[in-house]
Length: 347
Ligand code: PHE
Image (cartoon, rainbow, N blue to C red):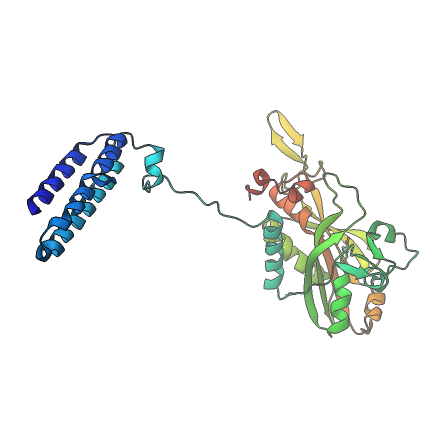
């Protein structure tokens, strides 16, 4: 019996080693391991083996079965027709791995982080306020009475008679001053809303960063100094800045601030073959408007309970989209909100 088992194993292994296709192997599996196969037949003969030899012979038979079945399995992986069906139950270690694409921050978030960092390094603290505001914080406390013409441009989306989506982050000035005594220096980044029709340069929603500094002897030159540091760090050391008189109800005097065009460097034209060409970014003016600013109006101080004779301050407000568009040369504000990966992947 032992001999029989040994020669069956030799025969099986040699036949398996010669098998070429998976069909050959399946036939051999039936021949040896099938219900009517050789291994089962040998198990059948176990009953006629003397009792004392049964454990040993049984053990040999079990080993035969394991040897044949593992020889069949490994031969299957090597058959010449090992295609998808054969691969399904084995791992193909030669297959290239799946590439994970790395996410990145939205260009507006990157710009906002840049702006915040510059002011944090200058000692400003970040303060945030609600996007749904009351009429008092959005208008009255900012010295914009009900009949003021500038209210039109700020009349946004009303939630009820007394609350609306804020139209500027200047609201946060009021909320901070109500709670904190001067001296203080804060910036407040956040979303604002306007009743504007959407086009390449307007959006009903955009982001602003407000700045406010209050102390005993803050001067207009402090405002200029801080903003000069900001524009140089944001747009480069050779950036120039100018103030144009303007009007804001909550500052007096007020100004709009321009920087020298980052494309033509203030020349108004870009070099091209056969002479200069009008710069398309600044429209030939050489200057780009980037923010509004001024000295805090005494009425605003009174509204929050600061003595206007004792305290002075400056405030400024800038649009984050505008800064990002200038910094990266983007000509359509809508690109920021479309989530088109072809655009976003460039930053
Ligand atoms: N809130 C003004 C705007 O939205 C900007 C501004 C802020 C101007 C602070 C002056 C001072 O246009």
